[in-house]
Length: 222
Length: 222
DNA sequence: AATGCCAAATTGTTATAACAAATTGCGCAC
DNA sequence: GTGCGCAATTTGTTATAACAATTTGGCATT
Picture 1 (tube, each protein chain N blue to C red):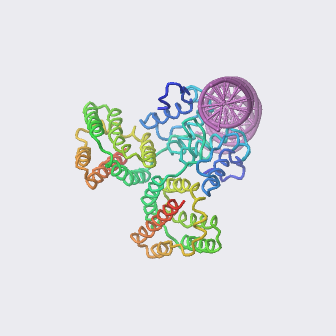
Picture 2 (picture 1 turned 90 degrees about the horizontal axis):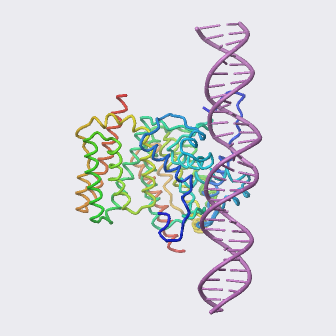
Picture 3 (picture 1 turned 90 degrees about the vertical axis):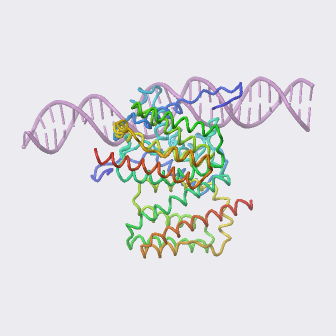
């Protein structure tokens, strides 16, 4: 991505790699909500010194993917019931917009990618591979959103998804136990083929709403 | 939470102060869009060494209030026509939600604060004090939004507003020249008194929409 | 057994120096 | 005059060390 010319080199900065690595770990629920992290322990875990770790941590903190306490210690955020509702409210507002914008750019390759992601997702679910399920679900949604070409909406939505990461480890066992998860991917794909904006918005909204119901149901159990 | 005891001190960290200072400068249009900033020049300008500046810059970059180029140089973002539309679309989606949530917590003091901010704003506008106009307009809106008590929505909306800052210097001369700016603050205040959610949403939406029209009109002129 | 306190360890903060890449500017050749 | 290339400057990156504040754990006192 950095360059396609034959000359340029510019190895990626350490702090960028650390940011990506930490972000990924957060988004897949590798850290428990409320868990404390320290700069030195992160530096030891990921390599490098404290300076580049600092950059990565502040970036994540600005995205609310990490929490800095009043005494300046670093914590993995804990999602409350109210925050989950609000986060999913924002998702429900933004994602249909991105989908609608993407409608102007649908092509066959994109539909194929989405259909494949959906298929892989269902297979993963059947096999109890929750991590795979989440990865493919992510791919399905963001293939769509990225097609919008929006450099405003897409990063915002991406940041929202990361914030659910630490909470996901709570949900994992329940996702794995479910046989017939009802998603609205098929409806979304059909709406894309038909270029039916209203139907597409409905499908995406319903998908987010289901996620909300699922998470809140889960929250009440534990 | 930080401390209520008489002993605690903990002077605020330098990087926090730098973040606030830089953010404020950006939000009031002190830097021109496209302008390059360097860590060392910022350190010289604000005081402190490069390390705390780094934290502040990365935080701002994560909020998209600063732009890091592919060659890692720091720029004040340039807003295109499309981005302004998208940013204001998101504002139009989020701000009525925050307002509606705030409706549950309206009290007399808050209405007074908002009325005062509105009054100050109109006075500033009449005197051609654009900076004051913007500050009081900000106060009017965020007194409302903050009343929602949402720790999710409010920071997101705040980040959106900051991103318009550098663009504002383009708009300044035009704002100053306008005599009868039509805002929808009175309608919003009335809706708050009546606890009329639909009317409140309409007023806030209209206010954002006017901002869009104004900015796009301005963009086309220059 | 509970509480208060002090010392040790841990943690975030900041400045600095060495380094690598990119940018700039000047001068030379055509 | 224009374009090329090399050197000087500027810029971001990273590690490290010294420092201040917090947190932790144990010990003594009640």
